[in-house]
Length: 84
Image (tube, rainbow, N blue to C red; front, side):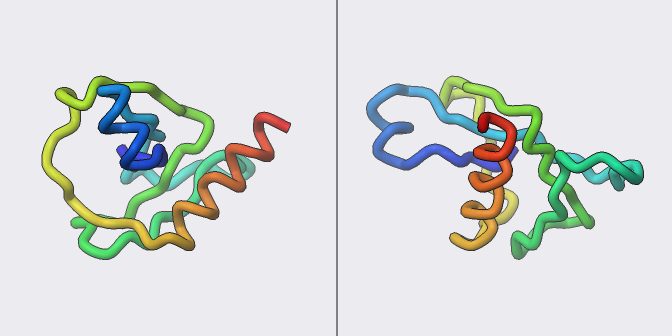
């Protein structure tokens, strides 16, 4: 799950805000999935921006990849479109 919350928030709250990720290509017409460009992912993956979660820091496993600042900005833009 890509973590979109800031490190300061994560450290102080003990939680992270993350969005779901899948390796299943989205069906046509499903606008809430963005293809990930994060370096290091083992397979082609999509971020499901409509599936946002708050998780305890303890539930986060090891890092598989790191998204660029541009990709995180793109995810946040998608969230802003959903929220309005």
